[in-house]
Length: 326
Image (cartoon, rainbow, N blue to C red; front, side, top):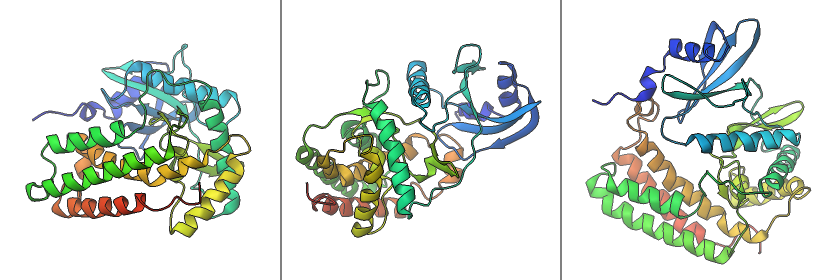
């Protein structure tokens, strides 16, 4: 049986890794909620606690990780509330015993009240500022979010491996193809749109709120893509709710960035791509013992039946009119 690399990342390894760059733990170690990587809050002797992030082996190249770090540092330099990797000995990315890791200052906060129009506008203002910086130049090392990378490739991965029950495989494949055809139609309606550097996973869980306002964390999924990717995940509820929420967000966003209304054709298309990508993400991580323990419902008959229904709903939603006239 193959032993997953993260199985070697015990508390002693975490503390030894930090000691290798001159940070000596005081014994307090708290695992934070992260599955893609391993993230810990660590108490440090005679200093404030910090957050240590150990990157999943073989996911990103060193250059791609450093490009993310540089983007976040660029945002901080423009006084946008983000949490950059700490520079130690002139570097933000370190290695120890086969693991790559970075350390970050600890920033607390609470979940944003996304039902509050003022909170949405404030959040939109800062997303607009992130996008103004993100549009200045492209990523060179990190991939794009598009129908191939988040749709066709994940679909092909799932079909090439034994995750979908045999009796549901043909049905799921058919519905997934219908969904991807719908995605392409949405992209055709939207036409050519600017591709910018994005947060990539900008939902309420990656926005922490304090009395001073929001700050944005976890740029691990930063990619090139359309600006609407960082906006649609803030929307929820019925169509009327999403219209109101988007209006509140754009009231702040457009103070710093122009919004191209044709992007609204992509809201349900991007949601569809995220659904397909999420199933493939779970499948591709299934050898990591943390995943079967955290997601026991994955790869069951019921799971795939629900995904078939979900994609059918998305096929219908993608043919509806955008949230407001374009």
